[in-house]
Amino acid sequence: MNGWHGRILRINLTNQTISTETIDPQTAKDFLGGRGWAIKYLTDEVDPQVDPLSPENKLIFATGPLTATPAPTGNRYMVVTKSPLTGALSNSNSGGDFPTWMKRTGFDMFIFEGRAERPVYLWVNEDHVEIRPAGHLWGKDVHETTDLLLAETDPKAKVAAIGPAGENLVKMAAIMNDKHRAAGRSGVGAVMGSKNLKAVVAQGKKDPALADPAGMKALSRTMNLEVGGDAKNGATMRVYGTSYVPDVTNELGILPTCNARTGVFDGADRINGPTLNEKYLIRPTPCYRCTLSCGRLTEVKDPGFEGKGEGPEYETIVSMGSSCGVDNLGAITKANYLCNELGMDTISLGMTISCAMEMVEDGLIPESDVGQPLRFGDEATVVEMVRKTACREGFGDTLAEGSYRLAEKYGHPEYSITAKKLEFPGYDPRGAKGMGLLYATSNIGASHMAGDVAYTEVFGVPKKTDGLTTNGKAALVARYTDAFAVIDATGVCVFVSVRYMFNGEVHLLPTRLAGLMNATTGAGYTPESLLEAGERVYTLERLFLLKAGFTKADDTLPRRILAEPMPDGPAKGHVADLDKMLPEYYQLRGWDENGVPTPEKLQALGLSA
Image (cartoon, rainbow, N blue to C red; front, side, top):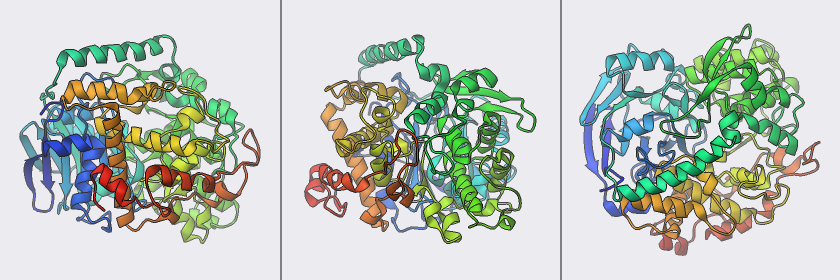
């Protein structure tokens, strides 16, 4: 095979056995790789009703056919499992260096099953694979764990590990690779912790074979020049990373503030890109062989918040900042460092803290339960709650369950700003209605990375659509979610892919990706067949959710977003208007009025109910 190694590594942690297997070439082509292969195997092998933290759940690391190739940003991997936070799917995506090193082991995918009796880690050096004891690493943070493992294995290897949050089964625990990069959403780190798997260490030199090396080189060069030209011309992502976004969303009135009470934050200019660059930035940091360098190496010297690391990105600035009423960027950055070191998703944790803040202020959570002040703007408390949550210490034990369970515990689940129990990212859908439809229908819950139509509604890429209208949003969300499934399956980054998402009437992204995929695999994709594969992946995920017990009733948004008009700003008076978009979305998808894929649609995609 080209592009794909065609080999899967299966690790049974219960009986400490390791086996390898090959994948059927037609299955490889139909499901692309990465997220596609992983959901195919998860669906075939895991009961959707399974307890996510039981040994019967499986944890899958999956690269794509473009991972570890010259393809621009061809350096992503997926972590797919059943989510302990939501009960739905997790398909968390990460970059850094680890994905390329994982692919170079000669395997496309690692499948972890069962549960080790004692803590272990996996060491993969091409065909040399070992399950090693990790008792000496248990309790250590991600950074110390990474350093110790590189000393034990190979200093040139790459590490994906959990921190104390994963060990303590915090439901928003992340898997961190290369110390600072996160497969963050939906609690994948807790699943890894439930299996007593502390880390995965990868090393190898087996680059995938290319079907057309010359064609791959030429197309990759063209795309790199286009993206690199954007960077040289002062593209905002290169200058600020994603930290430029608070100014944009605040101006539109959709910057989540004080647990989505409003979309306008008075302190936005104190937590934005220029402030980060002026006060804390050391330099931009790229993923492996990436021309964008959207990461930020930073250092905080503010008293009480000292630290050094990577970030924060926009979503952390929202969750730990405006959503918590905090305008101290030093405190936000420190909270980000701690999340990386302890292994937690910054979005879900920050939004859970902000939910608790509002409930305390409204008298629904007794302050005695918290043990310290927890009000909007309490920056030091936000930082302290990060540590307490990872350790399940005091009120942190409640925060560790996520905002939905926290709010439900105190009798008011409506305070949780979630969809399918996954906390909202940084776009209030009352002023970006396509994002509302995306959050409600996404197979993993409220994730912008499921099909980020904010690119058109918020940033005008490639052209602006009106965030305050529902017109055309059903088609837009369907189109983007299929395209994002392709991106996740092939192994490239959405930040470069979105440049080619839609170019006027020409659907350029699948054209570019089809070119890369054919030069890599030789499988003969067309733009249309590539998007059909994305739809196949997305629809199979939907079937998993339905079998897990999800229904049309779960394709919804919080009462605040559906029934409480935005109180001020440009989106004042608006709600999400989900009811105007959902029936059309189901119809465009080929689903019935209950959101169930029709037999005709399944047959067209080669799937069975």
